[in-house]
Image (spheres, rainbow, N blue to C red):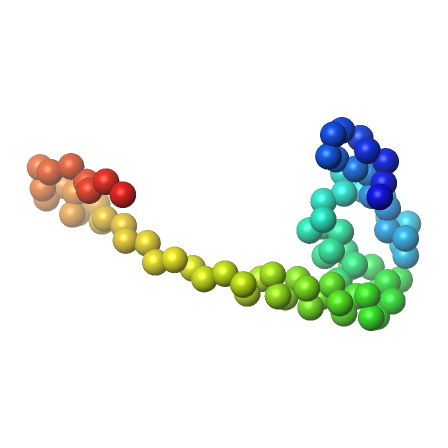
Length: 82
């Protein structure tokens, strides 16, 4: 773990490329190892590519029912509350 700059915020350095981030955000570091750092060993790069791919497909978009503007102005009634 890097040097703590503020409570919960750390400086980060890539061991393979020596790139330094003033504030190491996990998502940025994972993307760096998966896609950007050419010095990262292939097994590590593949591991993080797979992890990022898993994270991208683990949600389901919820259906949102939204009123149209013409539904509102044709009526003197207020919009339904959600």
